[in-house]
Image 1 (cartoon, rainbow, N blue to C red):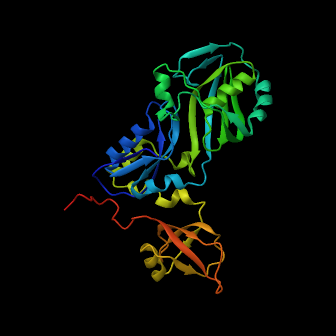
Image 2: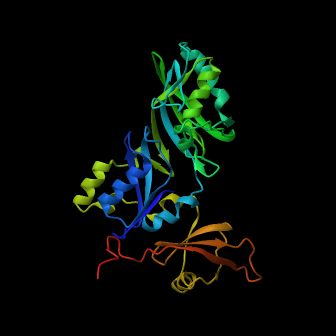
Length: 319
């Protein structure tokens, strides 16, 4: 997660921003910070400048949760234009090869099942992957040859939802690490054609969808009208896959002090657990033991403390 820290307002939670084309993910973070005055922020998964759609932004203590998300699934709608392949796999790149053949809709539908399930994919050279410690896209921009190894990715859904002239519209649901630009290039090559993306819309990630997202302009309006809390999601919003357990007052106090506690709860599975105070407010992650003792008690060890007791909207630099 790209993060920015500075003096400013203490805000904890997630924003779902509908990123517009032309902005980098880091630029969106900077604009969110400038609008909200938040003292700490970061994005939950890079979107290329050419792409648009859902970009989760973590504020304050929510930045701790990005790497803990169990569900890395994403969904996209992409517009794939046949006839030309570019070095970036999208319309921002340099033309590499031209192949005027446009497949028929029937041909395209017939080849799509080949790309379902687990497949091998070579990431695009214009990507944020590191090669010898440096981002691949930086090397590619300098004209250096970049060799990236193929890796296994997962495609859960690949549906043709439109086809007009030389452009197909595809809906994709996939696992973490999948590059839609590479998918488009590979589909075209399987059809003895060439193609590149002319538009890419991320429709869902980290449990956020398009209906959850606001534009930067809507964020500015909400902040100017004092309505930020209306569009701010809880810190543990992205951890919904992790079971939650409400603690008693004494157990909560001990856990916050870093001490292990015993519980009789047998329904909560072993492993990571979201821990809540007696009022149901999240504030800790813990690990619950698999084995119970002779009295049937299981132990919970606190693993990550979230400092959410600072007043949202307060300025830590104020005297």
